[in-house]
Image 1: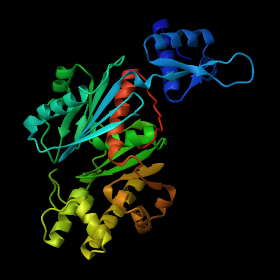
Image 2 (image 1 turned 90 degrees about the vertical axis):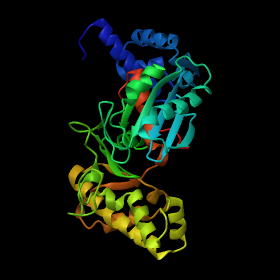
Image 3 (image 1 turned 45 degrees about the vertical axis):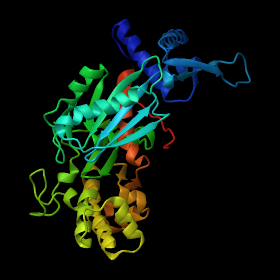
Image 4 (image 1 turned 90 degrees about the horizontal axis):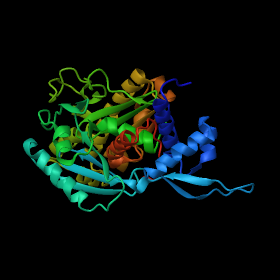
Length: 385
């Protein structure tokens, strides 16, 4: 039982009611009261307040055979918008969505701007999006920024492949738009996105493999980031002593052997070609190119080591792998599992990302929505289109 001031208790009950409404398609006042153990009068008063605030709408009557048909309630997902941005090394992706992560519009831009021009570039991209939006009750309720590096408390701590540590992106963008801005590591956002929209497990590891390798960690339904944000920098664990140099300062880091960037560089050396993009690599692989097969075997080899280490360290319910290798080579996870000889692997399920390139963006959407509404739990399970 919660003890406190009337205002505190009402706020808690309001958040519980709103959380219940947003996580279902429709629900009646009576069902809310029953599910939450609140009086019908309390629920009715809070619901009316939410209707007045244009957060909840009435959508018709429940189809019942007995007595008066109850009015159904639904979350007003069209009441505002969310802007999520993935600030990649060579590409910037922007996802615009409503307040349930639906009615999405994805845009992608080349990122060749030097670090000191990044705010100007982001401003242009965001402005282009804002000019398209119709008027709603709340407008844009939040902007999320996904960073490929270490983030702590909305500040960029370390970025190995671009230099953003000295730029206060949150402050600069909030000063321009007067909209809350949330900055987070891309692997952390990926695991939030997968949990919110696809896999509702209490303990999840999401391996995000792109220019580097990071893991997002959900432990007992909460994001784990460590003492100062460095948890999950799995790409900088050493798997080859005195191996290849890494921008982090170490030698032999995992991502120098298994990241998409490292493997494309290795393939280009094998073929004596300029840097190969992933689409070209897949074309070689599908034609049975022996060098492409060598690269896939390397990926399987090092990923098997990485997954085995994750299993023994975290013992999660599931491991999700988000990588173009998994997207375009469907049986590759089976080959990785087959390469893990430890008996530990039978206790865990390894699954492909369902959200792929939008995982990070939808994770940012989730953070914006939860902060705007003041709720803790969000499970949307929308279509992954």
